[in-house]
Amino acid sequence: MGLLDGKTALITGAARGIGKAVALKFAEEGADVAFTDLVIDEVAQQTVEELKAFGHKVKAYASNAASFDETHSTVEQVLSDFGRIDILVNNAGITRDGLMLRMEEAQWDAVIGVNLKSAFNFIHAVTPVMAKQRGGSIISMSSVVGEHGNAGQCNYSASKAGLIGLTKSIAKEMGPRGIRANCIAPGFIISDMTAAMPDDVREAWVKTIPLRRGGTVEEVAKVALFLASDLASYVSGQVVNCCGAMSC
Image (tube, rainbow, N blue to C red; front, side):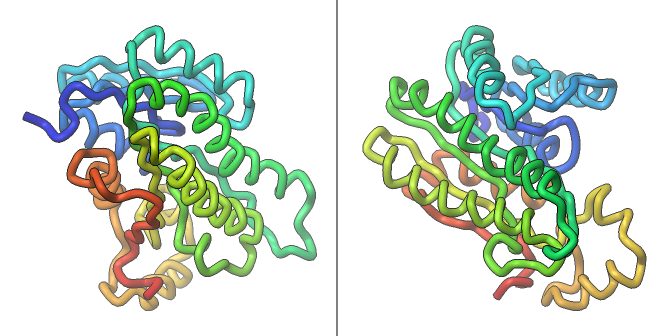
């Protein structure tokens, strides 16, 4: 028996990275998995095959998460294909870093659109479904920089802070319908993005972490599993940091 037996999860931006790790953990624990990415390329297809190995229903959808209309069409298709949606993970995200004085409007708009507006789009589309089912779990991937800010990432920090405010509001609005909403705030997580950092920059980051190491995508996925499952049946409106005490 898995923690998510009989449940259907919809995860945005899950072809790779944290989103993929969450999808794999959910499938391992019994969930059917629908996931989106901007394009369903060879990497996404490989993720589909890895998920299918757990023996549950899996389907990938090409979807621009920043588009309101496209998001609603995607959710309608997922509902048609799977029959229900019990878990939503807002994971889609990008960075377009730069100092405020040099940041172009396009950098700001792109990050806010993909990181924050996409969560609004999917929550707007999914909550009527969950309300009819009288239950559901919404998880949004924020960041420690959404709580504390970060020089050179005002757009990214603002988008991740916005997810926290959005989550707390949805928890209050939808709680009477049995819908829970929570955020995860990862810290320094080992990924393709952090692997591309210069060694000295990466080492400086690690020195700020009391556990003296970066986290793994699998460790973030375990937090998501907890929040998605009935183990967290009375947990809503919260931000769960997964950062090795970096943000204490």
